[in-house]
Amino acid sequence: MGRITEGIKHLLIINLLFFIATSLYGDLFYEWFSLWYPKNPNFRIWQVVSHMFMHGGLMHILFNMYALWAFGSPLERMWGTKKFLFFYFSAGLGAALIHSGVNYYHVKQGLDVLTSAGVPESQIFELLSEGKYNEGWLQAGPPGVVNSFLDSFFTPAVGASGAIYGILVAFGMLFPNSELFLIFLPIPIKAKYFIPALILLDLFSGVTGYSIFGAGIAHFAHVGGALFGFIMMWYWKKNQFNKNRWDL
Image (cartoon, rainbow, N blue to C red; front, top):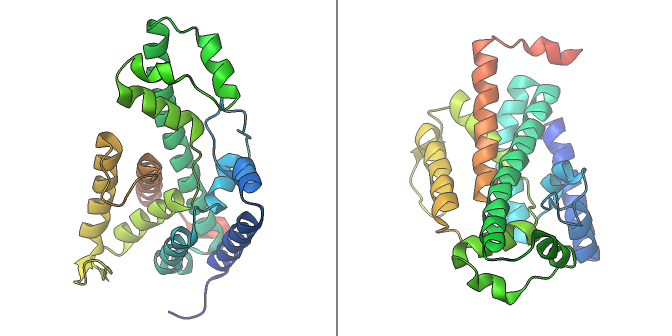
């Protein structure tokens, strides 16, 4: 594979430093740097970027950093560091935008149910701002709607996965016939088949709530990163984007 590329090297170092700091300071770091719902008292504007360097555990960061190195290295060698980093962070911001948009939908749905049941909106946000909720809310409407509302408000997003899904899309479009070997399915699968299937699986899990990979996964952040990655690749291909523009 050759020596590690500069952009990926620095991303790996920053992610590792954040992981060590999170291991040392735990709740404080999650509060400051995870991506919270905008009306949550913990929300800060820098979290739209900082959440990309936060991870929920050792396996989470190992899988993400391996994918960043394996799929990002060919892209950085082809594009150069500036263009690669622009793409990476743009996909990550796109993932945060889609994730937050879906959360907004869930919160609005939950608010509509609760206010229709006679719960004043001011009372709802007063409790939420204290990190609390009324158990009776769960009886006010469909439990799935209220649970999604509470999860969207109280659960922060962490991880580089959204940006990495953008990287996966770019890799699949540039190297469609590359054969990938998966730990859980040890047969070669071409990138042009595996990557779309992975994205569709995330979309299915996000819509249905059923995930074969377990709970606590921000599926729509993955889909958002993939979508923005595709849009950038489509735009660059259509406009014959000149990489020399990134060498200024």
